Length: 175
Image (tube, rainbow, N blue to C red; front, side, top):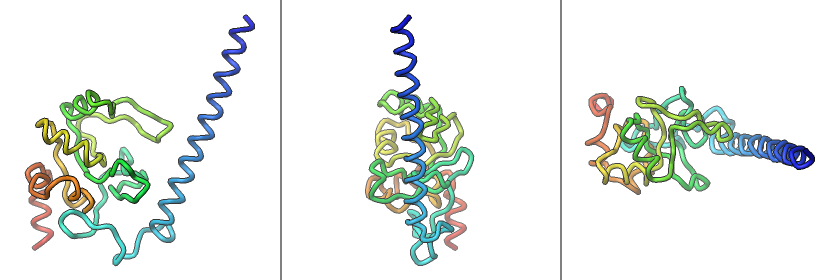
C-alpha cells in the first residue's frame, strides 16, 4: 500500500512538472511569435514571409491550428529545426507512412497543442518528411500559396507543383 501511495505521489509530481513545462513551452512560443511579428499583429508587408511562388505567405489552416507557432501559417525561424514549411492536405497513406517513419501524426499530443490529424486535414509538414514521402510515392497534395519559400531548400518547385492542390488558383493569382 505504501508503494502504491509513493507511485501515486510520484505520478502527480511528474504530471505537475509536465503541466508546468507545457505552460512554459506555450509561453515561449507565443513570445517568439510576437517577436517575429513585431507587435504580434503580423509582420509588415516588406518583412512578411514569402511563399514558394514569391507572393505573401497565405494561411494554411486554423482548424486544426497548424504551423510551428500554431498561428495557421507555415512560418519558420532558426528555432524550428523541423522546418514546418510545407502546407499539405494529409492523406491516410501519408499519415501511415509518417507513423512508419517514427512520427505518429494521428495520435493527439495535447502537451504540444497537437490535436492529432485525420485524412483531409491541412497541416504544416516538415520539409524533410514531405520529401521522404515524395520519394516513397506517398506525398500528400500541397498548397503553394501557403508553403514557405524555405521549402525550396529541401524540395524543388517542380515537385511541389506536381503535387499542388491549388495550382489553378496560384496561376490565377500571378496573372
